[in-house]
Structure formats: structure tokens, C-alpha cells
Image 1: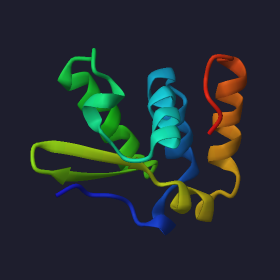
Image 2: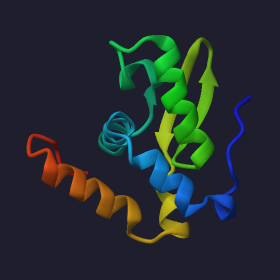
Image 3: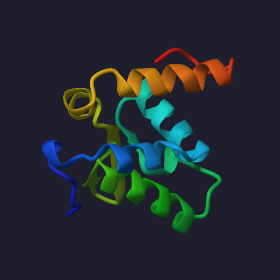
Image 4: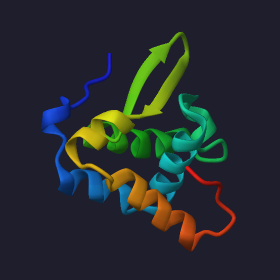
Length: 107
């Protein structure tokens, strides 16, 4: 069972820290585009420990929701919760990320 902060406990400093790392930001971009995915899809070439570190940080900050499904670890962006706490933040951050990475698809 994974622990997630309640919507009202999601803190802007933790969210911004989680989104400040390029690898995690690319993971959030992928989740924004594809919805829920198996965690391995977020970093198929990463060592499992690295992938676990980054997805745990995203979960603990309140950016993503993680659930077990058999042997899979399914992850999705907490877009509605983030929009409730910080209206427009996720869209603005992802738009800025897309602008700095022209090959990225629109969220």
C-alpha cells in the first residue's frame, strides 16, 4: 500500500522540487499525455532503484498517484488534485517544458 498526501496537504515547495528535475519533469509530461502507465514505462532504461527513487519522490510530493496491480506499479498524474491546490500550475509548468523541448507533444 502506497502512502499519498491528502489533497489539502500537498505543498508547493515539495511540488516545485519534484518538478525541478528534468527526468521527473519528463515523467510527468509522459503521464500528462498517456494517463495511467506502468512505472517501467517512465524509465525503461533506468536502473530499478533510480526509477523507484524518482517515482517515490513524485508520489510523496503529491504529484502522482501510485497503485499496485499485481506485479505492476501503476502511476497517474494527480492533475485534479494539483489543479485544486494550485490552479494552472501543472499546465504552466508543462507548457514551459514543451516550449524548451520543441519535440514534445502538447499536454
